[in-house]
Length: 327
Image (cartoon, rainbow, N blue to C red; front, top):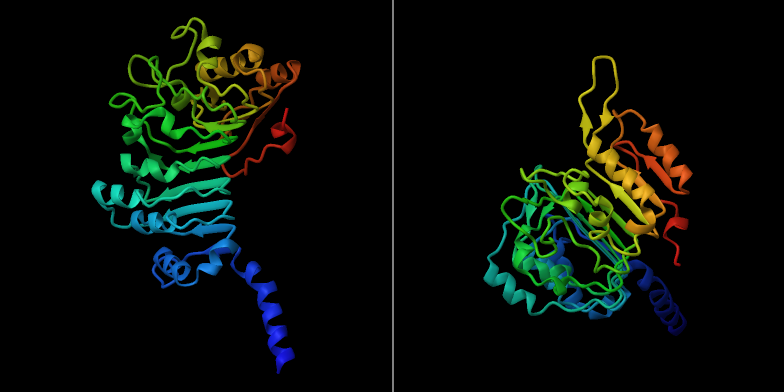
């Protein structure tokens, strides 16, 4: 019996870390985020075993309760929510819960993705605390409106290790708000993200609106376009993924074409790379399914020793690792 007990303990010691290193929640069951928090509070020995957390819901209270537990080995956190939104809570309650949030020292990957019946989730000012994880190297934000962060001090979001930032389907109402990262001339000023190497973003989000409140980034708007772009991009950027490129209505029988301002933008990124983004190696153009191949841009990129590619709507964008290697 003693040998059996020793064997059981040895197996438990071997199996438990692998059993709990990746944990999932299931909304609407006892295994939801609240259930996970209850489990970790009841069995704290599990906490250091967790390396990956995948939450299939975003509950403002339960997510904060979870992130108030210090998980020393957690390196990947995915919060994704589809369907109907859960009931939100007030700013006062969020503020009170934020006081208990702790730094997750090993957290490197943070994905926050919501799909609330095609409605963008509106983050509030008190939600900023959720994203202040300074060890993060890769952020991916999808389908959120962070206009409420306009009053948050820019230094609050300083992530010294951030290397990759994917911003998908973000909403910025340029005509009515100016988030804290927005420069005086419009657009996002990402020059302070000195470790950022990959950026996925819409040109209009990065460069801001024209006089009418719509995206406009041509030499007629900015005579020194290269300097304007340089004042927005991270200095060590190596991979730029452009979403939301616009196209011109084609004549009958012809394919759609990239609009003039997108062509001008990409040309500037290629021809003026040494000034605009000297470490830039790879540009990807998203959603090119129905747009004619811009062969002149491909030729130009090859001439300047860069990689330019177009991807279709359902392609998975995964730039070769060689483009993200260290200097």
